[in-house]
Image 1 (tube, rainbow, N blue to C red):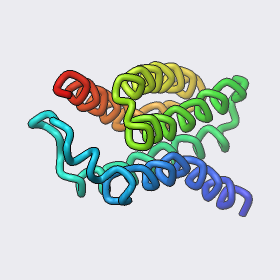
Image 2: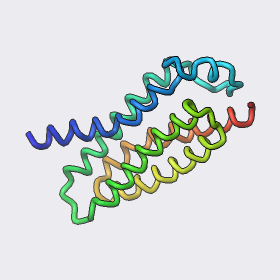
Image 3: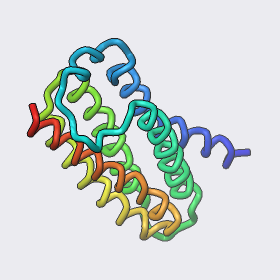
Image 4: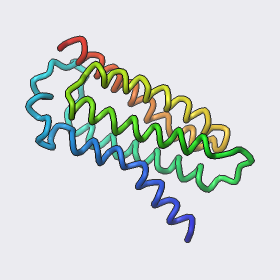
Length: 157
């Protein structure tokens, strides 16, 4: 039963940035007009794509965190937990900076930091549980795509 509650905790933690993102993202009413007026890349997906992709990625991150929670490794997990927390913070911060503050350039810096922390987190997770490492790859790929989208908005506006 303890493992079930650890799983629930890991999933809740991983979805926290999504809650922040929902507050500020288009469709929430806060930034609809501003975002709609921006020039965007031709590769910018429709809004529904983000609504599908992000929950899947948060779920994968939660499962990866759970695997770290329950792995009986000889390595210290403290660094993994701190990196995961930093990752969640930067993920939420990006939504706030981009959509809440409309600071596209600063958001670009945040997402670069987020990608760096994600890579560091992946390397740390890999030492503990290889499956958790592989579960983070789709997230990293999406972050690189988001970096491109953020960069395109920066250049086009």
